Length: 213
Image 1 (cartoon, rainbow, N blue to C red):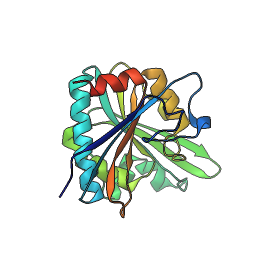
Image 2 (cartoon, rainbow, N blue to C red):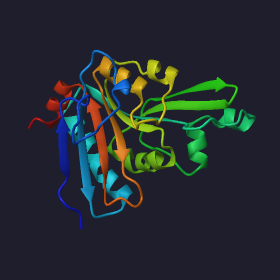
Image 3 (cartoon, rainbow, N blue to C red):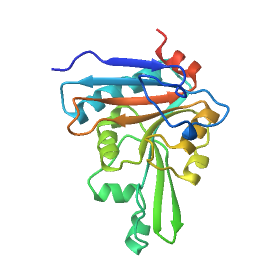
């Protein structure tokens, strides 16, 4: 049986807090960022995260009417540089692994090359209709985030640089959301955890706007 959703907020993640502590070297310079967490307990991790993601999307739709919600996902490891990998890229590779996200609008995808192989990074517009598949994708690829961004923001800059899973929140994506006045969310919870949910980071005024009744 689930308990009530537990929400915790801090208005400055650069100081010790009960929401999310991030190494200061990973916080963008000259920028104050706040954090909010939503947690539930009592059911499977996927079920808890799905319930909270639906709540978050409803909040964004209601409170931030000029924002879109995106799934940002990428390869956490280098992929072999083969014809099949190049052909499938990101979204088709996920589809081949049983993960397909329906009910989307815009879709973006970019590739990085190095001596180690290939990495693909993509963004897909999502809604409450696609959250079940989004949770599945998040569990399939650790290098995944939910971003709420103003509708007029170009996401090419974030895709060009890609992102990592170190320290949970990637520094380049934090810089991107600070510059664009967006919100970045990361799913939290492992298979044996009692609680699960999402942690979000944004500028303090945006967090306040999101939670104000």
